[in-house]
Length: 178
Image (cartoon, rainbow, N blue to C red; front, top):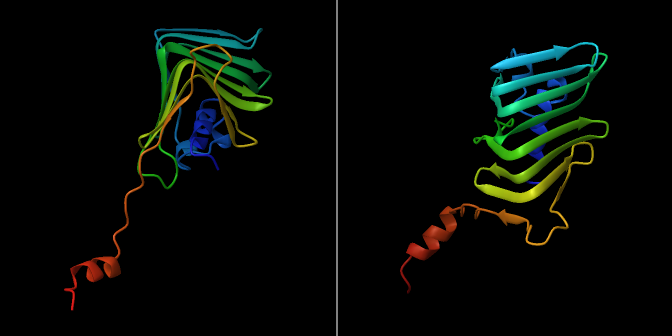
């Protein structure tokens, strides 16, 4: 599993049962707040604008505009736009939330993938992935970052792992030489 696999947690917005996040989140009610909502059953498009905030358990998404595309009862695509749009959620068994931000977050169900575009950044306990484009293939558990544009580099910052102190190494260092 990649270090940035929790990007898949964004899936919770579209379908709580597909979530790989804190397992109790999917059992919580989802609240969507916005200044304005336009729901059109004939087209299957819902548009939420102005200070959009989605919460469900530890999940929190924010943005300026969220558009949800449905076909029947199935969600096809979710777009969250903002300056930036943000995502935060606590994965199972982790002490820290995953944070992501970009100007545009896209979630597609077929094939299932998440795309962060424009000033994209994913932060997982200090390990940070930055790029103009980050794509997470949920099914294959793969991350693809970067563009073909000049000067659009991928930047990854990995924090050092804490050193494990063992009693044996401390004892041998403290023992006086004969």
